[in-house]
Image (cartoon, one colour):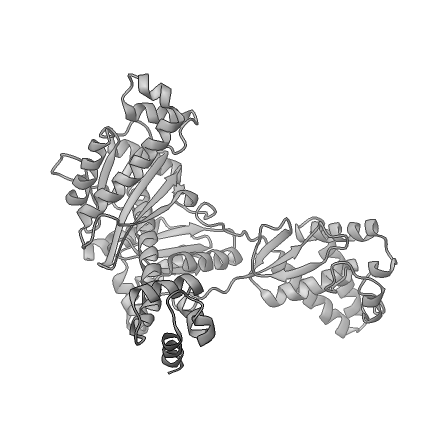
Length: 519
């Protein structure tokens, strides 16, 4: 433990002083805390000061004791740090982050430019609806003030009808107080109104921002000189809101959108060299087994492309042939299913060529994949979460499929040992090297994805198990009810008459179900 603390302090010396987000990890490589910082080096260093441990609360002391490693992500400013911190907390749900595990999202501004008279509105969800979105924005109060000013400044409508007319105008006062250009009654034509909207769009994108700010500051100064302090104060608030809202902050997309001090391509090159691969592993796949109970034994396969998560190609599995908690058998099944599928798809697409080719199958699939002729690219490296046992099980399945040439390693958590097929001694890569960190990231992602699936099935099973306690409930009736209503929640809300519409549910059973749930 003391040696590890020394390594952490050495790493802190080279940590950036820029704003960013940091991820704390335990000795198993799991992310246990996500935090933001104005100065990464200063913030991280504070965790390892002896004086902090004595003053910290019980939760923070427990966190500090559990820290084994950390990772940093640099951003441009504090606003971006807050957005990225929130995104990563929702993604990893670390156990020491309590306050931000809900699903609250930052506000965005949306404008549907396809409409005849577009209007700006606030939303928390970005949809694939062809609209233009701005944000997310960290300061909600400042954003609302900014949007109010934009609507007034550019004379934009705030009414809800998609196509406002004279009836809407009768109940609106925005034109009277000169807050709206009133396209509803033709005071500005469609082309003129759209020009105003596009000018506002340009402003939200930062175009003409300097001249607009200069004009507002000049107006505020004149108001102050004329002793019109109320107007000056309002203009000051407008400027403050605009500065907060329009400071550059990126929205970080899942997986690939996260900026980081980690350099994926450099890490890939280092990993390829450390493992003796033919080239840096452009495509990597990692498997993990999650068997919290024998009820649900599941596995995950996550795929990294160019060192970054390829979320669309993640896969999860429920075991079909394994009925007990047997990691080795489970690993064998999932590896067999994954690569048998890749082989099948490749042979369908290249049947004639593969039938007559003299190339080893792995090399042929790699080449066809590079040429875009394989529906699913064969990975350059396979990683299994575990030691010799899991690795041996996976290798045996690859051999049965004729894919024994495909590079595969096992990554054991306790000391981050890398095992190779047929070799007794593992490879140990320094914990500070990018090659190992890349392997840890894909392993952690596989672990998160597998556990998430297991939790999903467990929650579903817990909900369904409520039916088991209903008097007279059989497996057949339970299945019929779930097929008819889709969930236990809907069954609980159904009347006896509605329940009787399910196959095999008579009046006596239906009444018993209603009575049982009412209690």
